[in-house]
Length: 105
Image 1 (spheres, rainbow, N blue to C red):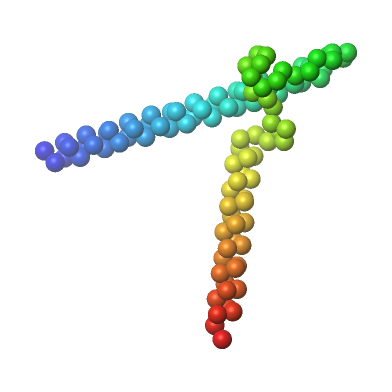
Image 2 (image 1 turned 45 degrees about the vertical axis):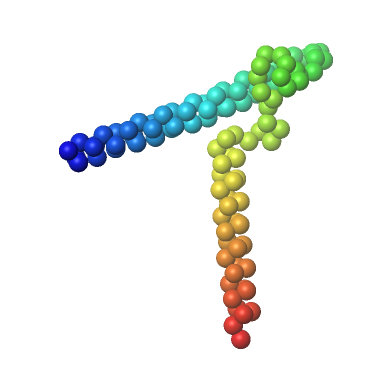
């Protein structure tokens, strides 16, 4: 009986993780699709010579999100955040080492 409940609880936990992962992957896919659509719209406006129309304001137009001014992809942003976290951790360890050296006579 214990084994049945153990397997059942494992399956329920696995189903919950799968639903959360599916939602996260769907959200990441939507973001990249919006970024691609906004980039293609911006390129189309730049490609038309003599076109003096301004891009649509956020919330107007074709529903695409405005392009990222830095042009960084989600992967680039993730790498940047990871590097910032590493740098912060290294800085904190160096400060702790210096503080310990000052504390020891």
